[in-house]
Structure formats: C-alpha cells, structure tokens
Length: 144
Image (cartoon, rainbow, N blue to C red):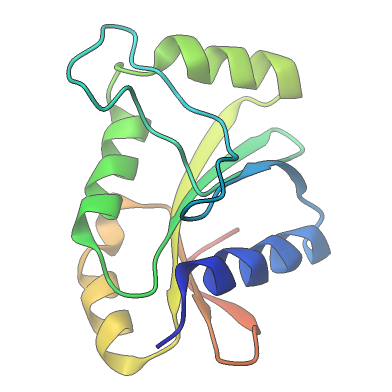
C-alpha cells in the first residue's frame, strides 16, 4: 500500500513542475506545516494543518493527501473554502503571498476503487490528483 508521505512528496514535485511555490507541507509525524486556526476556537483540535500549501500567481492552493479515500478530508476542505471559520488565517496567507483565490484539493493513490470513491465526493473540492507507484501525478478532476 502507498504511504501518505509518498503521495505528498510526489505531489510536491508535480506542483513545482507546474510553477507552484511550496509554502509548507506536512505528513504524518513530520512536525512541519502551517496550522490554520479557526477564528473562534470550536474544539480541542486547534485547527487544520494542511498537507500542502502552495501558491502560483493569484492562487493559494491547499491540499490534503491520503493513502486511501478519506471522505473527512473532502468535507474539511469544503468547509475551509466555503465557511468563514478560518478567515483570519486565510486572509493572512493571501496577503503574505499576494494571492486572491483559494483552490482546495485532494491527493490519493491511482487505483480504481479509491478514484471511484473520490470522484463521488469531487463536488466538495476544486481538484483531485492521483499518484501512481512510480510517483507520477495526474489531475483527474478539476484544474491545478
């Protein structure tokens, strides 16, 4: 089974080839990444730490990556984009990196079952990237 770290590292390389600047990245037990705090603390979780934050032109890109389909990530990204819960930290990022538009997406392994489930939740995100066993990436939904 493909590990989340492999998915994230592969997508980082892919985004760089597409002209994105990597702002931060995080994978399990790395201790890196940027924590986005809710404007009003709602629970003990302390916020959202995206797996990838990148920028290109006017676009700020935020991603969650997994080694399998995980519906919670689709819902979390949808909330991040459509709710006002994280306005303060998102405004700060937009200002710091001179971006205007937020794009949210998910990275997953390139296997049929995972893709089918992810596409069912595609309406919740702007894009989906799949990674094969060689680390090659492909956008299968939306645009990056």
